[in-house]
Length: 510
Ligand code: ADP
Ligand code: MG
Image (cartoon, rainbow, N blue to C red):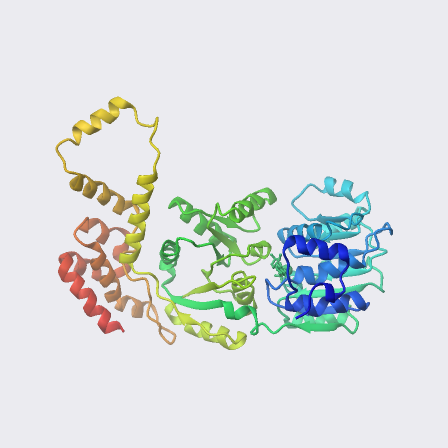
């Protein structure tokens, strides 16, 4: 294993890396940096997310810029604002001791006028999203006539987002003899076309994903009816008090919807998607980084900007259409040598999708069970009690009202009082889908009828957890239609007999 020094970086850069605490290069850095420093060449760098690609191109780029030459020499294109900003932040840190190099990010969603002003000074390196860059080129605020290095970061994503034509436009403003470095986590066929069109004899560096990053990710799937996914998510969150997770959805709407439902139930969660303003997104990211938010609900595209190293969980609320996205998503966890879990929610008849991902990505999945309602009830009541114990009441309770309450509760024991308020709380903490959320897997086809036939599984959790309190309420409401005939069945049983019933069902099922 080489050191950063051996890769040929300048003393200024080495100093900033020491300050940053980067001790040794990652695999992609070790292979890409010396080539980029020594040779004037095009390059393709393929490595999973979280493997340090930014430094792999950023460090040699900074060392190759001539600060005395007053022109934009490096251009980094990034698919999203978040990513652009993040690259800029990293380059700022890397170049801390290279006083005369200026770096500027430009992206949509921020006032263009400020960017135009900043561009009046020489910016040696510009980091841009394609749309805004074209705008700035047309307004003659950006000049690329002396560009030496063009970097396409997250190239797969950029093309997925339909930036192909923008790319053509931008490239038409750049000189022929510039060098192009393309970095990506995956290499879909459309990138190969780009490579043929824009690059000349590129050096290709490919870090095999199965060697390094993957082994720290535990891939799990849980079979859940679509309508139970939300409840299942809350159970996974509850059972992992130290969670720091991202929940991936396929649409902005779903993202927003889940975030709102979580918020309503007092989870520290928020949404991150493209319909939010830049300021909103920044605020969400800031809170997430501060650990003020525990869970972020995000679309694939918006999540590109999430640069948090200690994610414990990635959830796939819905699986992505394109399996390469699975790599991107799960690569958000288990970064920088840490361990993480990637949990895919699928319907019982979608097992084939998991098998397909396993085959395509050479990984293997284990089945995860959605935590049982009894466990969850314990966690939620425990949190509720701790919350009460930690509550500060000073100045909040007027003495006459306090005295009145004390008098009214005078004849009741502590146990009785606890039972009463606890029963209220049990209504609130939403053990709503009071049942086993694990859907049995079927090899496919399994229609509605098949699902309803297994009302037995609904029955077992439902009656078991219901215990002695508030029978009618838990059995009724919107859950009735879910568990079919089982609701009535559960209601008739006493707590103890239904517990037996539960065991019997369990045996049958496994
Ligand atoms: P990628 O672009 O491949 O997804 P990043 O460049 O965003 O990955 O890097 C992921 C994280 O790892 C960042 O927080 C970065 O600061 C950190 N990192 C990168 N290189 C190193 C290194 N050599 N040592 C320690 N941390 C590193
Ligand atoms: Mg990156």
